Length: 141
Image 1 (cartoon, rainbow, N blue to C red):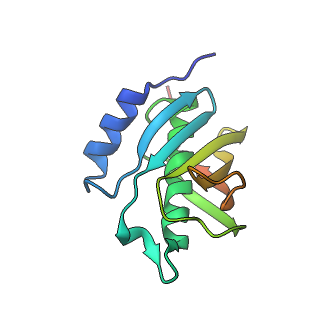
Image 2: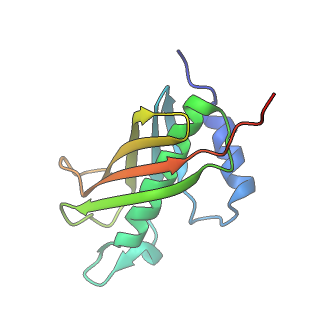
Image 3: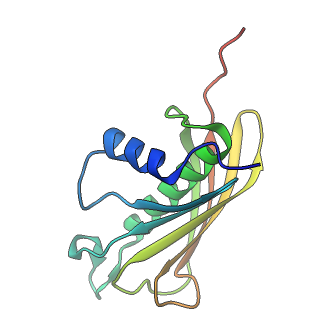
């Protein structure tokens, strides 16, 4: 089965729903149950030591998971993060950062994904997250 949304549709949705030019990741690839997002480099994402900050990586993991959910459910703006567990494995180099989210389990109310985050030149992940989203109740018919 194919993704229920396109890259273009999701980038348009994120642009309208989350204004903030230069701080918003770009969706670069979608497949059913998978999303890859890119965050361009900015000094504002750095922490002391010149590496990408933890909060920036956590936000990227959250965004990638949100996008991956849309590949299964269509655009579901009221889906909300219910848990995000992040393991920081290596310093995330300053540069363009990618996050790839893959859905592990999609239930009626909860969706669980794992996310790999790395700067584009890194061969090993900078961080790994497990993210759970709660889905809104479906309208009764």
